[in-house]
Image (cartoon, rainbow, N blue to C red; front, side):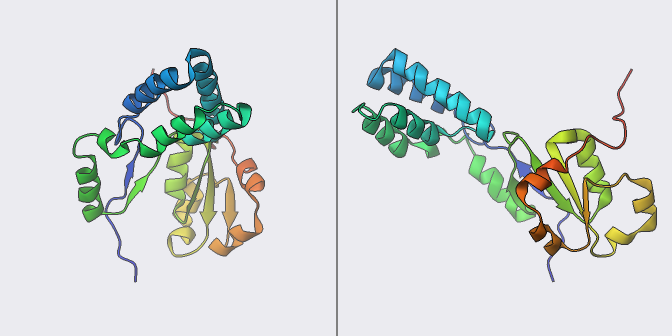
Length: 196
């Protein structure tokens, strides 16, 4: 039987656990020296384009795009070496790993970044799905799995709006492709309360 946890810890990475601003500044300085200002600006344009596509920072992915665009640039190898050898561990904020270790002792700890364009939340508790949908609106597809006793509480089912997708068993998700799951996201079913 799986142990129940009182708390699940959701932790961001960039500029929460690791000093991403410092990493970016170091890379900008290195790129300026290694490939010059103009090509450094092209790299960052590719970086931002890729971040827009992926929803998170991908330094090496942007470097690969740069390499494809400039296959004869001999400096690409030095930039690759810089990224591979970069002391990322030195950019962790003080005690960041200790905090994660403490959290892990108290309950499951999960990396959750706001960099994603879309989230998919699968749960058997309609109240949780409703609460997340109210906050994240169209950025989340909620999937209600009608398994277990929570999924069949008549009062809960009657007082909460339906999820974006309702399935009978978790295995039913195997019948869906990603496009269908993403398309199932809808605006929140209840108006979001605002303060006057």
